[in-house]
Image 1 (cartoon, rainbow, N blue to C red):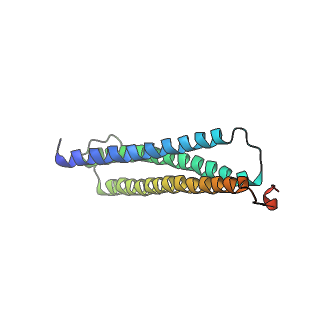
Image 2: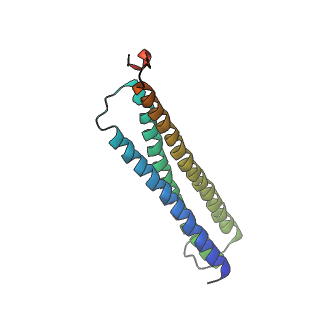
Image 3: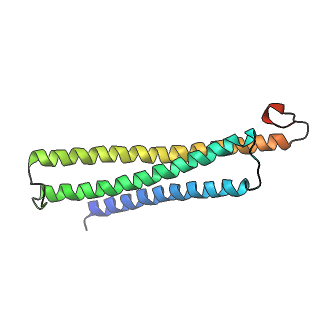
Length: 153
């Protein structure tokens, strides 16, 4: 294997681990939020927690979409290499065909990158909502705090 292939393989493995780490973090955050609210009642102060769980769920979805797109990119790259070498059974080694496949690979890579960015941003946004919920709950438990518009007095 060449140095270029080694670097590509290491980079790809690192990106995969990162995506799966974010998926695991979103899943764990949802599970933790559910355990924290098992005995909770539905009140307005729980709204940030609901938003946290929703954004974590969307983060998980975005991560799954990114992984799916990366798999498609790998297949498109394989098809591109076979077409360039004249080995693809459906696509001849023709500059126009190769250009179409290259454009499809670029579009898929851009789409995958957007899903990856969304995955991270939604995970962080969920954490912010969780912290807002936690601080709200702490404030409501603090003696002397009277917040009637939140359903407490």
